Length: 245
Image (cartoon, rainbow, N blue to C red; front, side):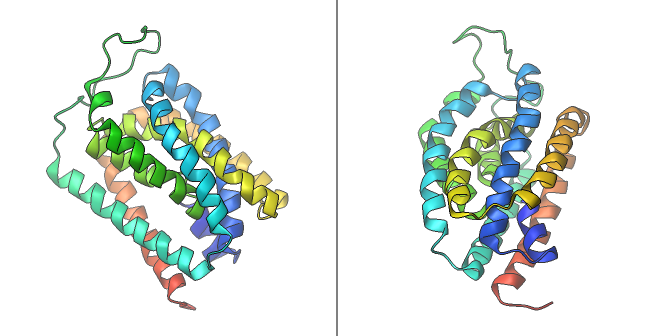
């Protein structure tokens, strides 16, 4: 969500190049934090594998379509996605209800299959897998990892705690981005001279973030995410409209 606007708005790269580079970095983000999140029970690996069935297929199909879309259209789609995400998060903050798993519920990584499964796993599962296919397409088209859809999906629809939703989305990112990055790599849209340094920074940042997240209140995460999403929506809308600002 941050790399694509940064590479396009600040450094002037094309959106397809920025998306391809971002997808490679998404893999590093997932690798840097997923193992820690699963071991500490913050990420629901079983739920992530179920939803990944939709995101992986969607990511591959989206990567094939992306090459035929103009940059300004992709920027407009990015802005619309950010506005929808901001609305979803704002609605969840106002409602401030969670009739499923509570904020303190965690997944025991050593528990056998079927043992004390969180209630949210079975809630709206069919809808969640279908929406995950859309998230995979969005991931490949816009290079955002799919978390902008899967986090609100798991949190607001399946009613999992926000931090569990974020950690589970991160767990899925590596699989989703790998499927999408393949086509970008074949087309030459990923520059090693750009991707290499960015991957190093992203991997270090995700490693640190996974350890800081449990100390931050979920409400603060929601508010910070909402502010960033609104800013990105505005900037990408200006690009879609051809602003030289």
